[in-house]
Length: 160
Image (cartoon, rainbow, N blue to C red):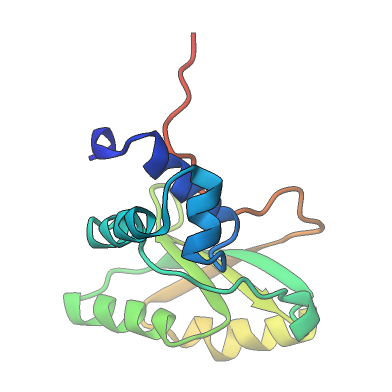
């Protein structure tokens, strides 16, 4: 699918990943085309699924979420129905920002925000451990953030 993108499409995606609030006119000027073709390209990128949505990135610390935790969760054997209930539960907990199923000793990796350690301890016992099949939770508390981006590379790097 990436072969369908030309240099202008790539520029549009690069600029929108940096600032999705740009008007079509501003974007068109930066990529060197007029506004109407730029708008059509953006619509095509949406329609083709390259652009999944547009959001505002909020500063979690300004909202009181000073901690960011990665929780590794071990899940016991679950029926299909219990597994669906587990993932539906994860979807309904707003402090869980991301959830991945993973290979290895643990079964899922969760990215969680919390205001403090006491709150997180209560969250583990009152939310995570109450989800179906949860047997163990191992937490990795981040100390600082060295990099955080939502921008996806537009093509894989080539290594020699």
